Amino acid sequence: MHRIPATFVALALVACATPEPEETPLEGPGFDAETGELVAKGETFIVGLTHLQVRNLPGPGGRFGDHANAVGDHLFENEPEGWLGAAFRNVGRLNWWTMTVWESEEAMLRFVVSEPHAQAVADFWDITVGGEHQAYEATREELPVQWSRGMELLLESNDTVVLGDSKWFANGGEL
Image 1 (tube, rainbow, N blue to C red):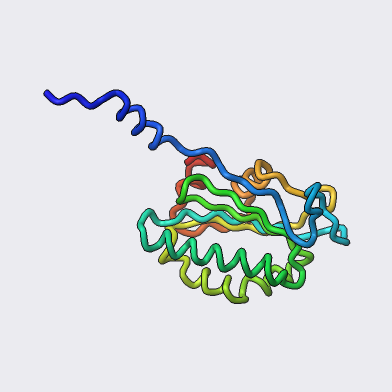
Image 2: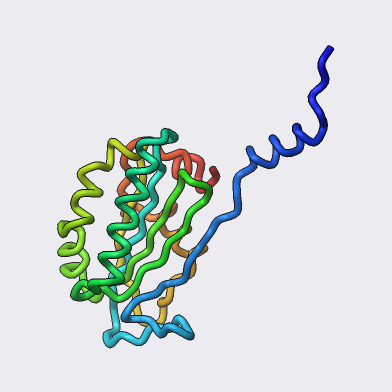
């Protein structure tokens, strides 16, 4: 009988474990680069929260990465009117979250229909199995939003739009 080395089994178990989340803080023209504090004027803002579960196939994963890079580059290089900041979170290579902050709902909606975001949305079903999104109004005192709070809001809000079959959402935030 051939025995599998214990080292191989240990490595396989580690590889199957859910990786730790990688998170960035809110960054952009509305946030101080050193402290992360909100510096934009105003008393209320719109926060957009999105989770996408990417299909576990080489083609969709690559296309997702291309879209994510194009959208991120567009935000940080062009700073669309009304955009204040963005933060990103991922667990492994299949679960990705974004958090964006806007001066107004109108500013957020202009971005949603602009290129390259509109093309990413058009490819949604080709590259994901599903996801969730919500936008809500936040006061100056509630910003910046920490990822732990953003995740709670996305899971608990009656305003969260659920598309497709996201295991994360269906399992109450567990992967």
